[in-house]
Length: 401
Ligand SMILES: NC(=O)c1ccc[n+]([C@@H]2O[C@H](COP(=O)([O-])OP(=O)(O)OC[C@H]3O[C@@H](n4cnc5c(N)ncnc54)[C@H](OP(=O)(O)O)[C@@H]3O)[C@@H](O)[C@H]2O)c1
Image (cartoon, rainbow, N blue to C red; front, top):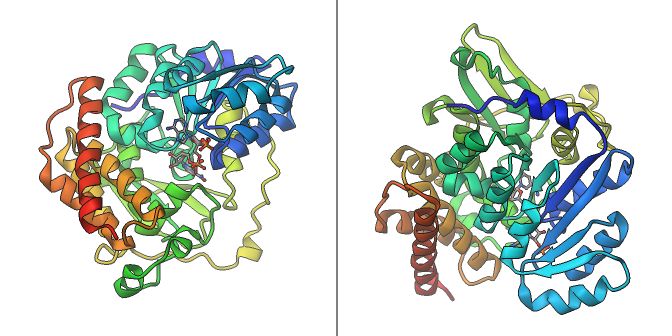
């Protein structure tokens, strides 16, 4: 069942200024959110900012935006942050619990832009107080989708997708007539290895894999784009956000990243959202929602773009798509295992401990080795996530150089 946009929240949010919290403010999505917030100080007031270890950037953002609180997840960074904020009036805190507490503070709007399952507790803290949550942190919906959507419903929270594909679908999705939706079509750039063969990928370096052709993103999502696991995670994310079953979610490779995704209706109409590939556009959609706010993103000039091309994804060269679909079909803890094993394997590749094609092997092996039990509560999500991480780490050690 899809959670329809909350009209009451939309009306409340229309009253400026909007109080915002940015989780993961030092990352790729986080810094672009900071950029938009800083452009309009009359419209936005900042409650809290959080990072993992990047104290220098967090402190700089805090001096600029003057939040009440700045938090680092790594407790070892506390003294450095406290010193950096001395005299600013901004409270400093550290530790994963403090990140979740930042999310629980009373802001109207929370950007969930932490990478990986580390975002689960803070996102949940924002959802449980019925906040409007701009949702970039897709791994949270992959590892705990059904339970997270139940929490969203139970607490009257609003999830606004930030992933460009899901933002596009959100903008053209008929929430009142979900039965009229025939299928969702997620577009994919194809990543840096779209035209490469498996032999090339087997020898691919970190530098080659991280170099995305159209988007400038954090390291983990860039590798996920190269394996196309990112699109697999997005199929799962779309399933939970829009309540559409897996067979009705297609992937279309579109190297120019101009058509950000499409919805096909039963009458044959296909609605899409287009724009230049600049994350500030989907971030601004969520930041201003229900209003639209200006962004400095380059305008789309279709004459200049001239040719938009589309092709089918290649499941032979990119098995991650198959693995993600199978995990969603299998249900229970399978997507949790997929995402946890993928996080471990991607980090090992970034650390140059394994080869590029080892990522899919480790994910597949972990999915095969562990049972796909139903997940009844968040404790079971955490246990399954931890078990998958242990198993994937063992596999990294086994293949690692
Ligand atoms: N980048 C994009 O264009 C894009 C597009 C669509 C969706 N997304 C999704 O958005 C999320 C963020 O992506 P990103 O590219 O912005 O990632 P990123 O650049 O790596 O930034 C991640 C942010 O999370 C913080 N963080 C990392 N580990 C943490 C932990 N254990 N606890 C608390 N905070 C932690 C980082 O802090 P430090 O800086 O201190 O390490 C940083 O602020 C991902 O789920 C990604 O899939 C990103």
